[in-house]
Image 1: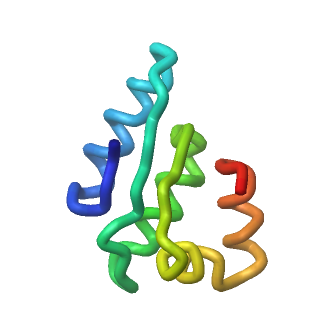
Image 2: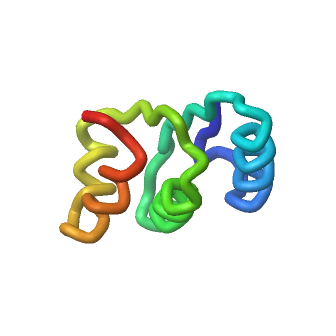
Length: 78
């Protein structure tokens, strides 16, 4: 499971490699801050996340615009 406690680039590398071999990639965007929100959105945009686990406050932070909602909706089933 990936979290935002790790820098973005290593997570992207691991997630891409895992997806390539058919491994499920889980992501918990925590701790989610204004600073690392872009990292969470980038990881989702990479289309490597299979499952995302979020709290209501994290979800609201990620979905604060219609464009963000469209990007995240592609990655998850609510």
